[in-house]
Length: 454
Figure 1 (cartoon, rainbow, N blue to C red):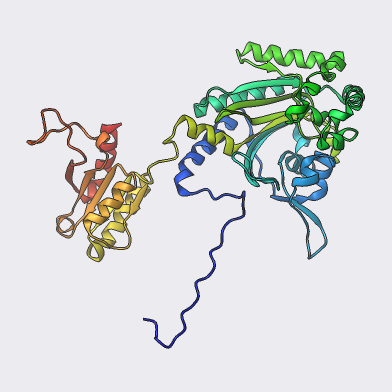
Figure 2 (figure 1 turned 135 degrees about the horizontal axis):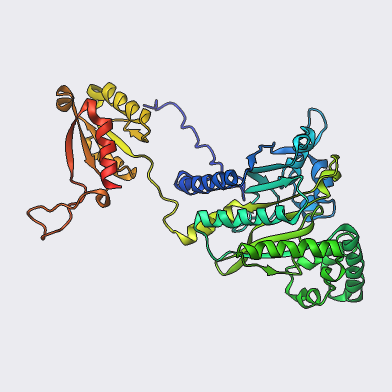
């Protein structure tokens, strides 16, 4: 009790997280785990191995790899100087450059081509909004050392299999070809000439990019510029024979697997290292068409980052946007049981036995929550029901003295139909089935009960 003479301690100010960097709360954990498990299973099915790279990388990695005249490098990177040694560092805004850096540094291509995948947080300083955050999560796949359109087709088919695994429908595939560097240079000059001739229609961003990165003007979201962009020279008119053959073969491979797609001649990527095939998966989220996954071929990047020239392609998907699709399709998808079994007990007199039962059940492969903190049986059963457990194991003093425990069915939809004397004929009795079980047989009985109801 506080002494009356003691001054009252002022309440500390409540701290909040950084805007645009969101907590993933336990209620969403089941949904995240479902996505993560589907990703891991799908990547394994295609022979991809996981790589984990640091969140912090040298700033120069992204300036050289992504391109100095890009929104990411110019405005969005979280960059700082390490006060201890003066190094220029950045939180990674994307992970392809980091994966390629690791591949070069550890000479992973020495043993031949590599199929790698990653998952984790990325960071961009932009205005937070739904589906676009300052800390966001990506899953990506990188096929390094593969030159042909077969690798491009494979990563696209991998995406489709992931959508199938997750039960996501209505996602549209768009593809295009960016050609090779000389072809893009010729197209670039044509774009500059076109936009210079219509300079008065350009907004500030377009004027800034006109001579540094005119291809990005094609990706403008400004409605006033859409007609100008639609009439601009198309890259397809500048593609050489090899680029057209690569793109044609990609289309043939996708057709052979009955995968529908749309050629979008205005589809570009925001990063400088892409060439040849590019693609996006687009979904309608709350009436707005949003890209949930994008990628393509980036043959120049390994050489740009100091490695021996080697072809590569891959993709990255936005985890938060994919989770939004899952929630929209299954409103209850985020909810999930915490455990298979909840153990209700009589306090100190039965606590050691309760711990022993819990550990035996966990060793057998069941998820178990042991009630802690005391409380009446009534309050414990409220916790048990809220946990989503299928069964409660009840350990009382008298039952324990007889070498027994009780098992109670908590989920009505898991029980055999029963009737009582007060309900109408055939009415189901809700969550009332309970039986005594020998303590030594509790593991076998629970597995039998699970088998009866599955």
